[in-house]
Image 1 (cartoon, rainbow, N blue to C red):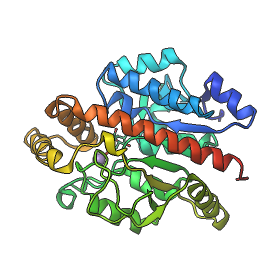
Image 2: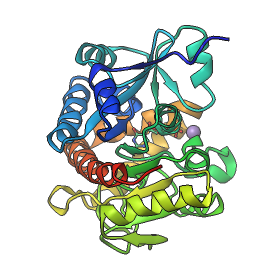
Image 3: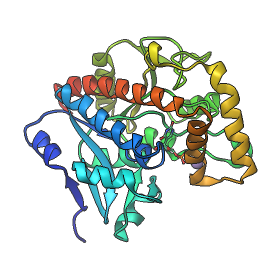
Length: 306
Ligand code: PSU
Ligand code: MN
């Protein structure tokens, strides 16, 4: 049996060998979450946001069977332009690598890859969760179970209202995943900072979040943490504006019989169209905001032993 085909980008390799903090970034948000060319702009801006804070970005993807931890700019550009790239979650990652395939990693697969590379903090936009109507479809993202078993702290802007957010929080509780709202009591609703739902936990500093990650390790707890970071107020879109748009996107998905892996990308694309791109401006702002917080958490964690 040969070793895991893991390839570090030049800058990730340099950061790791000199002990500087690294933050993981997913690639499904690039290939299935936003249209080209905005997806490429966002990916680069988020990477630069981290670099400006002295933290090395590691965008993760599978290219020709190898698990890449950090992409060179040309690889990022190619991935952003690629059509019909595979979407890889926990179930698909090994199969794609074994067959020499190329694919983008979801939150679940990015956590697995980050952990394999010794990266403890990961920034994204929104996580997958329990879909509306899950009582019939059983559509529950593998992201939730991944958070229960892989020790990576994931910074997201909460969960989109394309999901059943109540049920998502219930599953996270059942799975023993800490859900930490940052600087507020309510669980953020992706495009809007606040929501009617109270977050299970609240922390007001990157240091506390880093210490909680470290403490879980000392306790021998296997999973990670979900950090729910509200979108900056100046960038938010109100829940009232979005509610009918989400309902429309959901009914379009149902009418077209969209199932399985295709559900989340379909809904994201439909909302982008229905808001005439307005959803994207907010999306960019919140991902950058999450990168900044992830950088602070990774820097704090870097000072603590594993
Ligand atoms: N939710 C978002 N934006 C995203 C995704 C989810 O608000 O880009 C992507 C992430 O990669 C997430 C994946 O891990 O979709 C979840 O897909 P599924 O629901 O099929 O597990
Ligand atoms: Mn699903």
